Amino acid sequence: MNSLELKKKQADLIFNSSALSHLSIADRILFEKFGRGKTVSLPFKCIHHAFEHHAYLRPDQVAITYKGIEVTYAELNNKANALAGALIRKGVQKNENVGLFLSRSIEMIVGILGILKAGATYVPQDIRITPKVALNHIIDSADIKIVLSTTCFKKTVSELKFHELVFIDDFNEFESNLLYLPSSTLNQDEKNNCFVLYTSGTTGMPNGVMVTHQNVCNIIHTSPGNLSIVPGTKVAQILNISFDMAVWEIFACLSYGGNLFIRGQSIQETVSEVDVVIATPSILSSLDINKCKNILVAAVAGEPCPRNLADSWSEFCSFYNSCGPTETTIVNTMQAHDKDNELLTIGAPTPNNTVYILNENLSACKIGEVGEMWAGGLCVSGGYINNVALNSDRYRRDPFLNDGSMMFRTRDLGRWTLLGELEHLGRSDDQVKIKGFRVELDSISNTLEEIPGCKRACTLKVGSDELISFVASSELDEKTCIEELEKKLAYYYIPSKIIFLEELPKTNRGKIDKKKLLENLNEYNQEKCYV
Image (cartoon, rainbow, N blue to C red; front, side, top):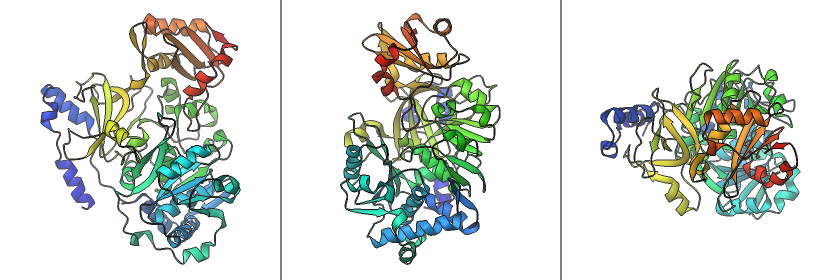
């Protein structure tokens, strides 16, 4: 089916009226109007084809800048072709999972493109920070036979249990290039997997999410996910390779002829040099905003964004507040924020996608009613590797489009505003019982973050009936925080303790590390805190 036929098929789909029969006519109309993104066609079938397009059009354009080294599109394409040839020579098959275990580098990008050009699927991990037991679990669960790395990690990677190892920086690229088959001859399909990303699992071991080329192209090759990137735009690459937002950084840049600035040790230094930054709110809040005024476009996702952060950044750049788990391919809702807006929302579905607000019985909620967000459309990934139970819990047939497609349970709470935007109300698993009342932890944190001087806040339930808030601020005190909370929230929302820190700890993906906050609670209690 070509793109025009697909577009016509999508345009012909209507929501299944029987699934909405309990709603009023007005709510049925708005459920469909608000819940469906625009229908658009995609210019490329596979994500690396867009890169190849620019390598052909502008071979001398700089593709990567890293520690003062510049690599052009032609040079990057040749290196990736050579690696693809090496992989094909070693027998890598179409849609085979290939491990990419290394750190942030030029070789990281060569590895991604080389694997994709060979028709395979890349499985990325930062080998510096991923435990050996987790890497071996990933190798087993994804059935990885070949691992790509760099020679500086030879000792570490050699201890893993795989069949064959390729060092990207240590093979004869001229010999390998002779055996490369252009990707157009590999009969690659948009439904083939592009990458497998591992998310934290409830059992302690990560779960692999299979993401297709179509999934990725649908956010990267449509607006606003393209972030207005054009040839020459400088884009920061600051995130962990195993984080899905790193995919956004890399391919939004290389799909449009941009210059990818790969960071060294300093995130601040890199962000101060570029035009576009994609990050978590926790990362942006840790930067000196006065050194970031060069930024033209910023996008955040991964965790709730404080209103004051969005207001500050939107004063000098286009600022997108976004939402979406790995399973719905990076983000599936976006909103360009204006500080004059009444609310900071996560916007509406991105093109070719849907968002439904459903109750616990999976029935559609009325407009304005709080429910759980379910995502449908081209964003929905292929599911978890070797986890039938989790797939059946999180992925369901879409009863509203009723065309055989799937929808995904995000576990994010939200509701539609009357303007057709989604108000994000935290995670369903962040609702706790305190003194017999249901409390939404994000409501407390959001209220704290509205106070001038608060950079970030996080509230956790400790023990059976205690709330503790952690606040990143060197200016605030207990009295101010409690007074602001009491103005806006019920008494059972007021934390019993507020702990002030210079910065809240972050995970290796740049989100607030709640586990570390709890682990270090006793240590914090001996420092500056207020009861």
